[in-house]
Image (cartoon, rainbow, N blue to C red; front, side):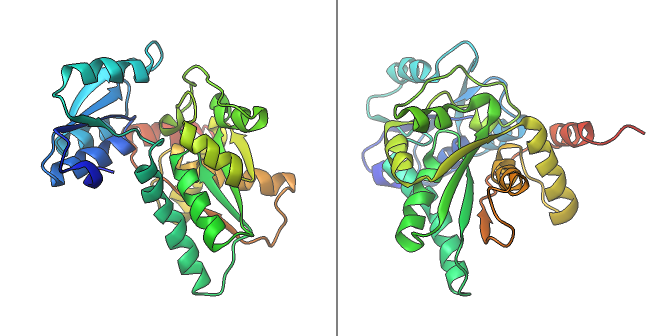
Length: 272
């Protein structure tokens, strides 16, 4: 997305809780373009530090009392003419870039003659699942794409059920990367066409996923990154996904502060 506007943009503006923020900050730095990043004031310290280390000029807002679209409009008016806004999900090049996750996964599996029955993807604004679902439908049309979002913030689930983009208040959840208030026009249209089902999971189920990744897989995964696994485990437990099914899970994000990670993991352990 940054590369496509690097020759004409005087700067890049975006908003993000941290993952997209880091990507934009680094991409802008590599292309020699100043980047302004609007981040919630309670963004994880690790994500903030990384964004700043990549050269991003961070402006804070309150995600619970302010609408970031409105904040972005105000901020852009203060920036040089020619500043380009690159949203975290509702952008064709962002969606295309995130779609490479699905393409690479399916290409690797098909090289081993493996076909997925289900592919579980975390959902915030819908950029990741939109790109992945487009890739999957082109390369593995029989694969069912399952979107997973926090129970406290099921705007995508409501949107697909009602056939319109549903706006909600900023959800209270440990999955900071999925604390979005609504889908985008592009992502909603793609999800409506290509996503088989949307489900939700609780914060407790996310912490259980973090424990599983840490203990069994030796991986540090942030809460948002555990949405896909939590969704798979929930559907297997309910019988919606039959035993023996071939399932893929997208693990999106390991950007979690170690202190916060230990607090969440410890909260799920039995007291001595």
